Amino acid sequence: MRILITGGAGFIGSHLCDHFLARGDEVIAMDNFLTGSPDNIAHLQKHPRFKFIRQDVTEFIRVDGYLDAVLHFASPASPRSYIAYPIQTLKVGALGTHKACGLARGKGARFLLASTSEVYGDPLVHPQREDYWGNVNPIGPRGVYDEAKRFAEAMTLAYRRAHNVDTRIVRIFNTYGPRNALDDGRVVPNFVAQALRGEPLTVHGDGAQTRSFTYVSDLVDGIARLLASSEAEPVNIGNPNEMTILTFAEKINAITGNSAGIIYQPRGVDDPNRRCPDISKARRVLGWEPKVSLDAGLEETIAYFAAKLKK
Image (cartoon, rainbow, N blue to C red; front, side, top):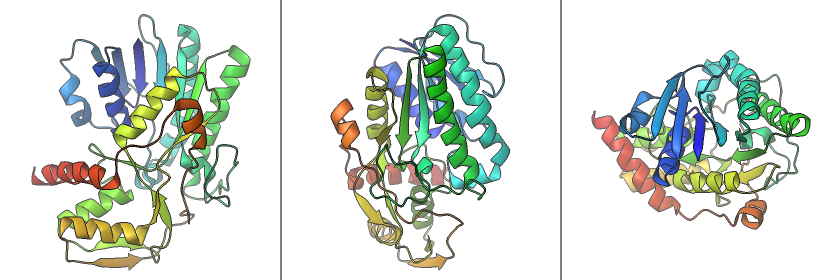
C-alpha cells in the first residue's frame, strides 16, 4: 500500500509510520511541526519507502501519484496544546479534515479519521459506547478540541454519504508510550517527568477522577485492524482497565522510587470525571483488545523519558 499520514511527525503518527513501513508499505508523512517533532521521524529519513512533506494540512494538499489510504492524524491533541492553539485546532479539525477527505476522494483512497474519546465530553454514561452522543460544553476551553473532532466525524461521514469515500473513524482513548512529548501536559508524561526529576506529582482536584491507559503499540494494532476492516462507523480503541488519577500517581511514585509525594491543585474547567471505553465493538468487529500490561508499558515509557531528560 501507499499511505499518507497527516500528523506523521506526532506521537501516534510516527508510530503508525513505523508500523506500515515494517510491514512493507510506502509511507508519506505530512506535518507542519506545530506540535509534532522532527525527532520522532529522524530515524526514518533515509528509509527508501518513506517520504516527508512539511505542510499545513488546512491548505490545499497535493500528493503526486496514487494513494491507497489517507490517515488523518494532524491535530494538537493534549489540553495544553489545544488550549495554546485554539484556532489551529479548530481549523485542522474542520478545514484539515475537508482537505484530507477531498484528497482521499480524488485518489480513490480509503480515509481513516483519528477521532477521540473527547467527543464524549464529561460523560453521563459509563463506560462509553460508540452510540453515546456525549456531554460536551461547546464553548468551554476544551470545546475547541471536542467540537473540532465532532465536526471532523460529521465531515468524514458526509464524504462517505455524498461522495462514496470509503471511510473509517477511530475514537482514541488515553494513549501513552515513547515519543510522548515531555511538555505534553497529559497525565502520563506529566507524572513520569515530575517523578524522574524528584518533584512532587501534581494531582488536580482530589484525584478521584478516572482514566484508562492504552500503550501505543496496542493502539497502532487497533488502527491497522480498523483500516483493513469494513467498519464505517466509529470504533473505540482504548484500555477498559480504569483507575483513579490518585492511584496512578501513587503507582508512578512507587515505580520510580520518587519520595517527593503528591501535591494537589484545582481541577481544570470541564475536566471529565470518568473516562473509560466500552470496547465490545472492537472485540467483535476487529478481534482487538489491548495486550500490553500497564507495568510493561510504563517500563518502556519511563526508560524513554529518563533518556530524554539526560540530554
